[in-house]
Each structure stands twice: as C-alpha cells, then as structure tokens.
Length: 581
Image (cartoon, rainbow, N blue to C red; front, side, top):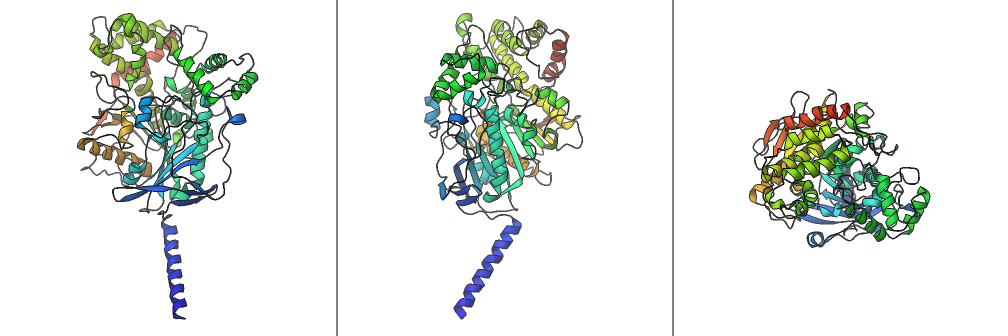
C-alpha cells in the first residue's frame, strides 16, 4: 500500500510539473519532436553551457520533381515512425565550386531539396521562444541553408533559428510570363516554409505568434517581396533585410522570358509555344537545365548585362505589381504592419568586381591598381543606363559627374565605383524603404544599420587590398559563427554585440531589449529611424549611432535621378520600370 501511495505521489508531482511548464511555455529539452506531419529524431551540440538541439533535413514540401517541376510546392505528406533529422540534406541544384566544397562539406545537390534546418536551445527562460526564420542569399542561383550553423546564435540569443532551402536558378525562377509557368517557384517555396513553421514551431518550444523573417542579398530581396505580397500576411511579426530590398533594381527580373527561351534553345526545346517548352524542359535532366542556365549567364555577347539572370517576376499572383508602385499606392501586403530592421555594408558595391574584370584586357589595366575613369563611364555606366534607365543619356552624364572625373586617379575611381553601385543597388532602396515605412505614425518601429568591419580572416574569394571595410556578405560571418574561421578577440566581441542587437529585435521588436534600455556597457543604445531623424547604427568594433546615411549620395538617387528619368524617357524594346521615386 505504501509503495502504491509513493508511486501515486510521484505521478501527481510529475503532472503538476508538466502543467507548470505548459503554462509558462513548452519546456523543450529533448531530441525527439512530434509534429502534425510525424516525429523527428534530432541531435544536439553544446555551445558553452547551453545544449542546442538540431533538427536537420525536415521536409516542408514534396520533392519538386517530375510533374511537380516548374509548379508551386505541394505540402509534404504525413510520415509514419520517427524520421532521422540528424544529418544535413542536399542543397538545391546549383554549380558548386571546389573552394565551396573545401569549406562547406554538406553541399551535395539534388532537386529533392525543400528542407528546413531548425536549431533549438534547451529549456525555456521566459515562456515560448521567439523564432528567427532565415532565407539565404546567393543571387537566386546559389548557396543553401546548410551554409550556416544556427547553434551559436540560438544559444547566445535564446531564440529558435530556422534556415530554409528553396529552389534556385531556372528550376526556381523559370518563367514563360504566361499560365504555362508564371515563375516565382522559389518564392512560393519560401512561403510554404513560413507556413510550415507557423503551424509546427510550437512543437519545438517556439512561439508561433512571435516570428521574424530575415534574409541577406537574394534572401533580402525575397523578404522585401514577401512584405508586399498578401499571401504572406499573418505569418510573421517582423522582418530583417540585409543588402537586399524589394525596391532594389535587382529584386525583379525584367528579361525572364528571354532567359527562358535562350536556355530552352540550348537544350533543344521549342520556344514558340509555352506549354510545349515546359513539357520539354520537364523531360530534361536537372543537370542539363543547370548547364543551359550557366550557358545563358556566360554567353551574353559583347554587351555587359546586369539583369540577364533568373529571378522573381511580377506574376499577378505572388506579386501583383511593381514593388515601388505597390508601396506608393498602399497595396502593400503586410509591409506597414511589421517591424523592420534594414542594413547594408559600406562596400556592398564591390559586387562590381566581376563586371570590371571583363575589361582588364581590352583597356590594359589591372584591377589591383584601381579602375580607369574611362572604364567606369564608358562601360559600367553605359550598361547600367541601358539595363535600368532605358538608355537615358542625361542620367548617364549625371552619374559620371557625380562619381567620376577625367583626371581622377584609378584608386579613387575604384572607390567611387564601389560607392556608385552600392548606392544604387542597396543604400538608396534601403533608405527609400525606411522612409515609406516610417511615414505612418502607427507603424511598428524600424531600425537601420551600416556594417563596416573588414574581417581579419580569409573568406572564399580573394580580397583586393584597396577595398575598404565590409564587402557584400561579410556581415553574415558575424551573425552565424563559422567553426573553421579564426576570429580575433575583438571580432568575437563584435559577433556577440551584433547578435545581441539582432536577437533582441527578434524577441521584442527592439534591438535594445524588452525595456528599450540597452546594456550600455555591452552595446550602445540604438535609436529608431524616423522621418525627421534618420538614425543608423554603424556596426564595427566600435559601435556608433549616426544620422542620415550617405545623405548627399542618397539624395542624388532618390531626388535627382527620378526627375531626369521622368523628363526624357527614351523608348526601348523592353520597358523597365524605374524603382525609385
């Protein structure tokens, strides 16, 4: 009798503990999770004293193969038994270089790639955990969720981190511009992943009412477009965009059908009828489609092009109009209802490097010494004006006057070329986005940063010595700690500070924390962006709060250029809507 009483007592205590845990939030300290789709067996690693569970290769949609290729994703069916979630899945089809394989071993490719990786710190400190859903960059044709390990960020910030794979290149963004294949399949993949997380993250101890979506470069473009799509309303509370915004010229592909036709011809598919084209391309191997895509990118004739690549399109479904028009007309999805954090790098514009290398031989110069003014004005600006401004010669002249002069030395011209491309592609669209968002007083707050630190460790590509500060993508190494990179003591502190700002924003919508009072001994207070005080945080080993990012250069793109563009539009075969103004 005594033995039965003791067992009953233990049972009742266990029930009470579970009820308390349920009231405070799901107590997560296990590596098996039960979702509506089935059970998952994960693994874990220790980050300091924190155990972080990892659930890898979680399918959020059926494999987009066969008849599902070039279609919206279809929900994954329920599985029986416990699914192994301890190893990375394949990445979506892309070209993988040897240098990438040396640094990132988890890089096998497959069309069957629609997976999530979820990182969960154990225990619950303050109820259910806030969630960060991150969409990787890579120009809509490369990279993957496997590139980053979310464990350190999850442990240090006490948030759940979710990383998403989505279809890339032609397999993700082919478009015939009609009902045969409207396009944007990669964006629909991301949307399906958001829905999966919204429905299932509570099973991992997450708060489904406190989700932040974030992305860098193509991931940032994607976030910007989700904010303008009514399809994503209600799936998240906040958004972080880094070096990629919905108002960026690169966010929308304006030559989608031409790219599709060129790729189809290369692998022997007809182009006169869209249905026949898609039927033919569904019958081809994924490797053949990738080969056709790479051929299109590398064989652009004598013209230097900035937009001839697969990417999002205005399809009338996911995206009903030009991003700038959607925002200005108020038909802007959840944009006005979510908190924003936007950031750029001071040398984002060094993405021009691949374009500039194109002219080293013909102009007899070395990029190691800088850029000749003649290359900048006669080639780079010429291509930009053709692709984005309908060959408006007035704009071409003004850009040259703003960022160049015949007597400028090659080093200064190189630095100005970086500024020009970074201003046009990133800084100006960023500021324009923040201004729109901050105009309504009832909007959640928005925050801006400029990442300025040049990493001490080598990354995949070689560095050009005269390029100062942070190049495109450098901030990512200070969000997701890389195990094989050697950070200095100062850089570890920077990583922790930047991570604190980001995860505070994820949890509270405020980088300063729940009470809006930063721990000034660790990070300075970060004031939000307003119509009158355009604050931004300069993210470096010495954090500094500043105002009005590149004010004169931004005014040139947001005020002067739109006036020139509207006053003298030169007809071209392809009408490309200007994104600013």
